[in-house]
Image 1 (cartoon, rainbow, N blue to C red):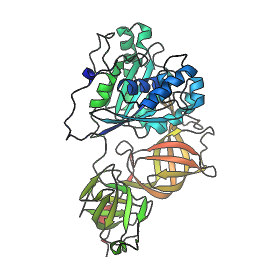
Image 2: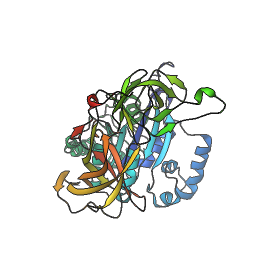
Image 3: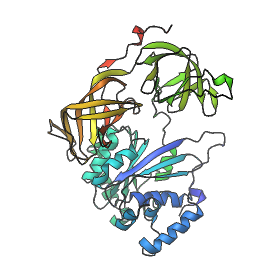
Image 4: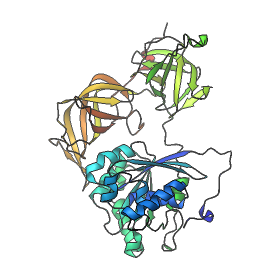
Amino acid sequence: MFTEEHLPPVAPRTAPVDILRFNTCGSVDDGKSTLIGRLLYDSKSLMEDQLEALERSADLTGGGQINLANLTDGLRAEREQGITIDVAYRYFATPRRKFIIADTPGHVQYTRNMVTGASTANLSIVLVDARAGVIEQSRRHTAIAGLLRIPHLVVAVNKMDLVDWSEERFREIRAQFEAFLPRLGFRDVTFIPISALNGDNVVAPSVNTPWYQGPTLLGHLETVHVASDWNLEGLRFPVQWVNRPNSPRDASLHDFRGYGGQIAGGVVRQGQEVVVLPAGLITTVKEIWTYDGPVVEAFCPQSVTLVLAHDVDLSRGGMVIGRERPPGSGCDLSARLCWMHPRPLQPGKRYLLKHASSTVPVVVPELLSRLNLETLEPEPAPATLAMNDLGEVRLRTAQPLFFDAYAGNRLTGSFILIEQGTNATVAAGMLEAPREFVRPEQADYVI
C-alpha cells in the first residue's frame, strides 16, 4: 500500500509543476484499466464519492471485491464485458507533476480509438501479460506509438504474480521487444515488471522483485524529462479564427484585429519579423495576447492572439511563420496512414484532409506499402488498406499545404482524412519530409 515514505523528494513550492500526458495500450485484458485504477487509488487521488461509487459497483460487477478497472470503464457495456471500448481520460497530480491519462481500448476492433488517445501523448505505456508475452496486438500498438513519434515508451510487464515473479520470463519478454524496437525510432524505452491488481512496482516498490533495481511506474512518470519534447525551432502559428471584438463599451477595441490559434512550433516575440501564408507577405508582431493579458513572448503549445503591425489578408487556414526554418509546401505529399474505417481505402476516391486549421479536398492516387505487423516489414503496392492497417500512401490535395515532416513537428505534420457525405473520420496520417519549402526571402514587404 502507498505511504508517504514512498514519495520522492518534494520539489520546492516555487518550482513549476509541468504536465505529462500519457496513454495506456496493449491487448485485451492485459490490465490497462486496472493499472490506471491502481495509480489513482494508491496515490490517494480519488475523492470520497469516487471511493463510495467504487465500493457500490463491487457488489454489481466485482464479486464483492473492488474492481479498480471501473474507475475508467464507465460504460455499462465495458463493465459487463470487462473490456475498454471508448477512450477514457483521467486526471491526477502528485507534488512533482500533473498527469492526464488516456485509457485506450485493447481490442483490435477499437484500434482507431487507441490512435485518438495516443495522438497527444508524451509517453505511452504498453502493457504485456507476462503469461502471453508479445502478441500481434502488442506489436500493433507499439508500432502505432512509434509512428505517432511518442517520445517515451514504457513496457509494463503485468501479471508478474501469475508467473511467480520470474526474472527469466521478464527478460525473455524484454528481449522480444528489443528485437523490433530499433525499427520504430523510440528515443527512450523503460521496462518495468508490475502487478497492477496487487500494486507491485506501481506506486510502491515490490518486495517480490529483488532482482529489479529500476524505478516504480509512478516514480518514472514523475521524473521522465518532457520539457524538450515540443518543437521550439521555427515558428508555426496556424490561424484558427480572426478576433474582432468591436465592443461598443470599449472604444480601444473598435479597430482591434487579432489572429487566434495555438502555437504549433517555435517561439514568437513582440517585434519579431514574420511571414504570413499563403500570401507570402512580411510584417512584424505588434502584440501578443493570452487569457491572462499581454505578454512579450510565447511558445509552443500556448494558445494566443497575435496582433500584426499591418493589415493583411489572413483568416482561418492561414499560417504565420518565422523567416528562419521555413515549412514545406505542396500538393503532392507522402504520408503514413492508420486506416480507421470499416470501409477500406479506395484509391482515387475524393476525401477531405484536415490539417492544422485548414480543410482541403484530397485524393489518394497510389498506395505504396502496408506494414506487416508480424515482421514489421513493408509489403509493397497493396490493393487497399483495411480497418486498422498501417501503410504508406501518396496524396494529392486541391490546394497547397504548409507543413513539416511529422518526425520534426507532430502538430504541423499530422492530419486526418474525412469521408465526404458522412463526415466520418476514416484515417489518421503522418506527413513525410517535404519536397519543396516556402521561400520567405522571395516575399515582399507589406505596404
